[in-house]
Image 1 (cartoon, rainbow, N blue to C red):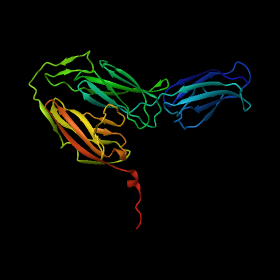
Image 2: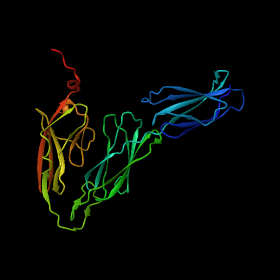
Image 3: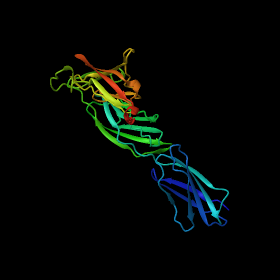
Image 4: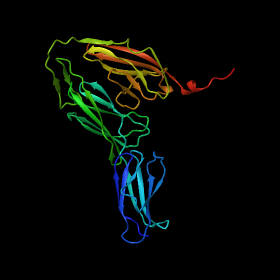
Length: 328
């Protein structure tokens, strides 16, 4: 029994591919057999077998595949219920699913922070994040996907204050890209008469806006009473401790942590793995654990002064919540 010829795989989307081929040049056959085998560890859909008769139309659609997953297809010629010993084989990857719209936060007037989703059920290996207009120091960022449970983020530096940008996010699985998800965000404008030195980027030494009015400067002041005295949260969830302020120039933010018997330490808000801070200065703690309990101090400062507030974080274990009552 001679094998088929010229197998082609056309990926249409994350869930559909089209298979086409030519019959053998010689020999007898009654039908063709297609075997689709998943290659991705996350894909548990199982091996499927499809029999295609001589009167069936081609190309043959293969539906309900897993977005971003890789597969191996094997194609046999069949004669009198016997498969050809030789077969055609090809590997392919479907398009990964698009991500939810990213969260856009600002660090300051010239920096945007893009927080990316990392859904456990999605199959992909890289992020592609692009900002337009492309006047950032790096306008295209391709990052490897972190482990499940970590919240990846990308920062764009050197932007123009008060300008609107489009941020496009795609995922990549092997050589296939998802449809882009686009978010729009406008950077904060500089205060009139503001002069900023960019210490990290000496190639752009100064940014100057001509004054249009007299700007009233003021020291930092907490809004909504400052950080709460205590916060209780269940383990495994994300904690958010508020620390919103007003002030001009806009106050910077620092977060410090201290537990019983330990020295106070400053939290690294740029690592993006455990701690982060949003546009209002709130501290985000990812997937809190019992060991995260302790005192969290927020410090807001500008050139006119500094203020601070402290929150004690308590973590409730799931077993403390889910355990059924015991009859006495």
